Amino acid sequence: MDLLSGIESRTSAIKLTDPAPTGEHIERIIGAAVRAPDHGRLRPWRFVVLEGDARLALADAMGDLLLRKNPAATAEQLDRERRKPLRAPAIIAVAAHITPGKIPEIEQVLAVGAAVQNMMLAAHALGYGAMWKTGGAAYDAGIKQMLGLSADDHIVAFLYLGTTAVPGPRAPSSTEGIVRWLERT
Ligand SMILES: Cc1cc2nc3c(=O)[nH]c(=O)nc-3n(C[C@H](O)[C@H](O)[C@H](O)COP(=O)(O)O)c2cc1C
Image (cartoon, helix red, strand yellow):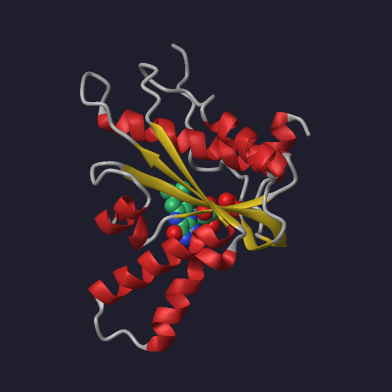
């Protein structure tokens, strides 16, 4: 698959199933991430891989977060929340670890966003499906701690990975109304 066809054909999966990417493919996907542009070569990205039963720790932490936010949550709501990380056979939490200094924080976070897109394209090229998720869990200090991240790190994505069971629709490719060419005088 050439690069442009990969970009043009990628969609987020609506439903993922087994098999998860192999260990070798996960290494390749993360290898693609760290090729993203990175102002100052700060390597702001951090990756936490959760496969199989390792996802249960995230499921428990997401259940705890729901109860902290809403102590009156029903057993059904709790169950639904806990099942969220089980919707893909593998998840990679991708975070930005900020180095204070002359590179603005936003640029370090953007580098990690670019890394996530590289991961989605690499997964697509290797024949897997992916979904970029965040939600309240991405902003919670308890979840970050469970993942071994610091409270100041930014979780940029929970990248759900697996084999596409239901592909999502293609995003509109029209650039109408969003591009302006300045005429040369
Ligand atoms: C930073 C970021 C966070 C996102 N978080 C979620 C999310 O929590 N839940 C969700 O359903 N989609 C989320 N999305 C959107 C989907 O991952 C996806 O990009 C979108 O549905 C468009 O589909 P496409 O990738 O096929 O064009 C997020 C996207 C980005 C860039």
